[in-house]
Amino acid sequence: MRSVPSDVLSLLDLEGAARREAENAAPLIPSSPGTTELRDNAAAFASWLGGQLRAGMPTGRGLVVAVAKPVTGSRPVAIWGFAERVTYRALTDLLMTEAKQEVDRSPERYREFISAPMTYAEERGTRPDDDEKMDFPFAIPWPGGAIIQYVVKADLASFYDYIDHDILGRELLVRTGDQAAVECLLDLLGEVQGRRYGLPQLLEPSDRLSDLYAGRVLRALRRKQWAAWRFNDDFRIAVETFEDAKRALDDLAAAARDNGLVLNESKTRTPSISTYWDETMISQVDAHLPRTGAPHDPADFVADYTEGARDSDPEWALSFLESTLTPRDLEAGAEAAGQTNLRDADRFDIRYIRRALMRLADPEEPRALSVLSKMESIVAFVASATPYVLRYLRAMAALDRPAVARIVEAIAADVSLSGWQRLCLLRAIGDLELLDAEPLSTWVEGHRAQRFEPAVRAEAALALAGVNRIEVQEITRALDEEPSALASWYLVALRRLHDHRVVTRETYDAVREEGGLHATILARP
Image (cartoon, rainbow, N blue to C red; front, side):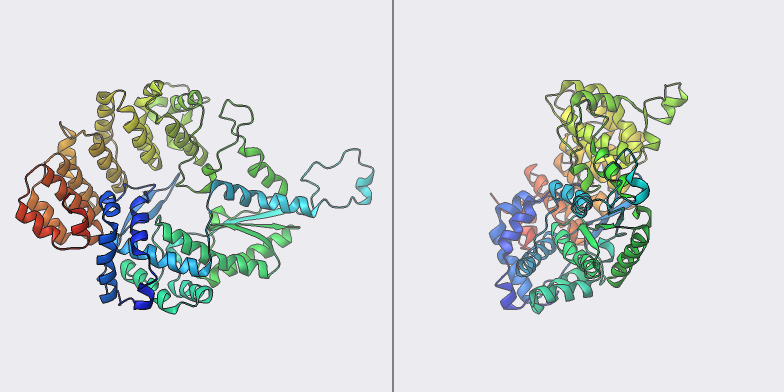
């Protein structure tokens, strides 16, 4: 990365960015080890990082983990090194402050977004009755008689992946006038990603930059006089006729294309206002909950990676999970009526699974053990629910650790796991301290093999170091040979081995004296 000019560097809050980065938890992948040390030693790390940026910091390429989406597909989630992440956050903080751009992705803001076309339709009012309808004995029920008759629903396909850095830079320059800081940001993105397009997913600065970028598409629509709204990469346009809906959709596609983006065809629809009313208002009443008129938590609708509601009725959660079946259950003669076939689970089924697991991940809910046997099947058939299953298992370990260990062993032995699922399961095994016996210890050791992704190998090393089942030399060699984005994994592993008193003082100091992140994580108490 090129040298950061002194006038830009003086405005960067590197220490604050380091603390915020240390406190930021990744929602879908295990968090980077070493966050506690980064937070506690933020001042020293920021001082080192400032010197690196002044001189021109060598950057490491980021990694990508393919995280399962609900139903189908995967989301590329980024793993960056701490130095690159803190720099990314500090530069974005500076530019967003200068641009006066605030991002609100709260559930309440999403509810406002999906309600906006209905609110607008109410403001526009109803159509005047024609002569044939004057004598009709019943009024047309709302919203059937509204002037607004259609709503265009669309979102952008692989939005983060195709954000053009040059277009982003021009937008930032228009909004801030800070060419030097903009160039530093684009230089960082280009080097770490190895390309001139795309933002790393699930890093908070990317959410803010992407929001600024998507605003260009919304502005283009509003310049054409469309009643349009946006939440992240989702769009709604309220129109009077189906012909207007087609023209609005054409304009939306053109605005996206002008910014290097395309619409997601599978999620592009033009429902009537009555259908939209049913989808956004009526269908938010959750028929699966026993409480009368209980609405969905709006977090269920914000994005695929939101955690969903935490206040579901435990009776409902137990009942729903008990109703889940696999094809094997059906072959054995299980009754299918009123049950949820995990093989065919749709987006709403997966939301209910997620919500139920969140509710039962409570050590004070001993009845939750009754659905423990369902967890292997959920991981096997609903891969995107894996983090929620593991959270539930962590909670249940306080009630029946041997039973949880048996389920984890079954998942490891019998389920075909993706690299991402292995990453999550390795972290859970370490957290649950299940490496003290076979077969899990051998299973984890096997993940140091080269056929696995670098992040999986690093997570296995971290878990093994916690129980002193990996050699010091293997860790120090990995620090030299594995991607630098994973340095914190191996540094924390070395620290754990040091706690086991198997690392000589000379070796420990030799690694720590590399400075920067090494000194931050290996700092002596």
